[in-house]
Image (cartoon, rainbow, N blue to C red):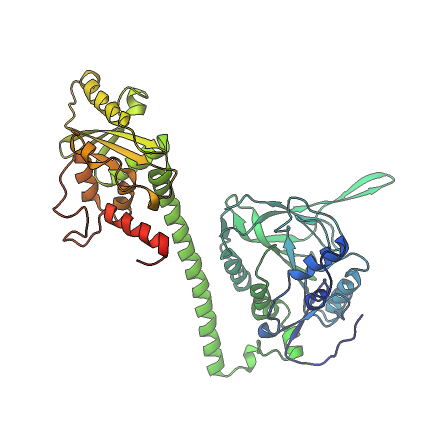
Length: 483
């Protein structure tokens, strides 16, 4: 192993079972598959601000006895096993638990994992000196994860940091699995040892981030998904995990990131406690606001997508939601009377009863849509003689294959609409009124009431922008980026 200077320098040594990424830059990544895999294994740890977080990396072929923790250690001979064993032996001789961070899965190549000298295949974490393993199954994109209640401060902090990963970050569920050993007398099954404590779970309660502790508590593993921000992990490791699990490691190097609370002045204790509380509340507030945003988007997306891009029942359902929000009592006539027998919806408000036909067209709207609603009006007295209609409206999602900013503001030319006995409303206009909660505008449009003078082209007296004017301005923004 390469020699390494000893003595306290304020930096906590951490073992990583790959070659130094800075040295790997000298190799041609196209040379051989072996070199390519070496580069890929090291590249994950490139760009970590080790010194900033009070850590010092000990790469492959470096002395690991003084290390306080290990990241993805390898048990393969000649490729990290010696360094791994020295790390475990040194921790045991000091009476300290071996603190290990391991990643589950392979973020960019999980569909085709390959067993190699760099460790077990994606979706599996094996232990040293204990039976069993943790196996993973990749979740589908967009999976939601939740923090387990009642965690201690260290695990809670890690869970909050990882919960705030980008929405497209991969996750794997984790399960403890028995070990099988094939021999001359058949296959022997060894039950998994240790305890797997979940930190983050999926919607079914399966762990996606967890802490595993060996039966004798000599090893503490934190299993995190591949693709994490390693700067965050190293920061958490030095600031939170080591002070909790291996505090002597920080004292040995006289880490500036840790001071025994018994040696602090009252001013230091007060400032540190305030900072920890601030960081704790920040992460909690960020997670809560992220949940609020996700919830708001989940509620808005069916309406937004339905009104701007939907066809058929998707568009009809979105229109019905907007009409109900505007105060109408809405009946789905397709469901009640049968498809094609009448218009799509019946909307009732303050004594007005309106037939509403909802249509989508990929190109310009044809006048056939107008005749369909007129035919439904003519048939209505035969379908519901005891419930006369007082008005009707045609709502059209026109040119729905175009970006909303590129669509014509009106469904038909004004000369066509002026001769109709009912209004023709663009579903995009409904979207803008719904987004701004302008329920009076929705009511006026569906009931065929006149808009105030000048409202078609500018801001009305109340300060709201009309849908047509808003979309014209939107198109300008989308073209040059400025209003």
